[in-house]
Length: 262
Ligand SMILES: Nc1ncnc2c1ncn2[C@@H]1O[C@H](COP(=O)(O)OP(=O)(O)OP(=O)(O)O)[C@@H](O)[C@H]1O
Image (cartoon, rainbow, N blue to C red; front, side, top):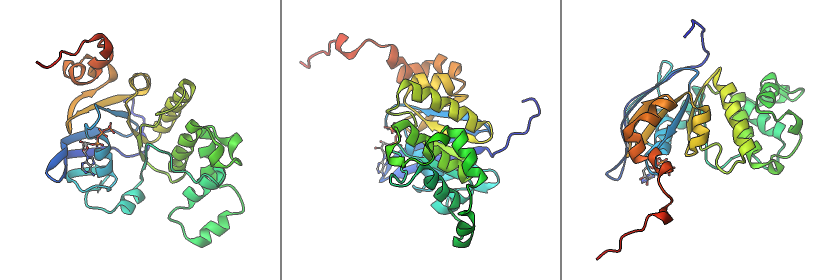
């Protein structure tokens, strides 16, 4: 890097393991995600991507080590991990539909603050909220109820709610699922802007979206990291082609007759 100092903290995962009733869903994962990265986690269904994010955010028990900045996250409860500047979105948006965009952001900005501070802040729109509206492109829609927003706009609002909490590590679960092409492009550009100052990890199945916007990629398979690197590097990896990416160039299933069992 050219000596520039990126804001944000890196994520270091070592020998992470998550077991459900004897089944190992995450099986010794190591990850080094540097500050300012836009890392995509890809892999077939059941590879362990969501479980990995659950472990980082404290939703499931894990062994090994997950360090963010100077702090060990494993063993800490969910709310303490959140307070260290780690936030996530889920596959379905979780905004307050009856409240306006502004109110949703305002509530998120007030998270963790006392009622007196909240009252004092009522007089104006906090700068962090104004900035989040601009970053997410929702300024014009600030007084609309979140429930009337398009699917993509709700996802951007959720990302905005993480920004106003000054989250330094954003973990996003399939942020472009169900979005139109235009919404995907806008989301990719949003994530690039966000990751200029923070660290962003995206679980994704959309390979076109990954190719267009990932700065780095980790491929998970059966709970392990199968491959890691730039988009070009993982695409060129024969192991990846075999278990995952190769599928996109395979003939349609209909064109492959399935042999009848004798
Ligand atoms: N709470 C749970 N109890 C038991 N098994 C679980 C639990 N959560 C996940 N698993 C299993 O762990 C494995 C990894 O699941 P996970 O959801 O992390 O995969 P994923 O890579 O995110 O898949 P997808 O792309 O389909 O979301 C799967 O086999 C899943 O069935």
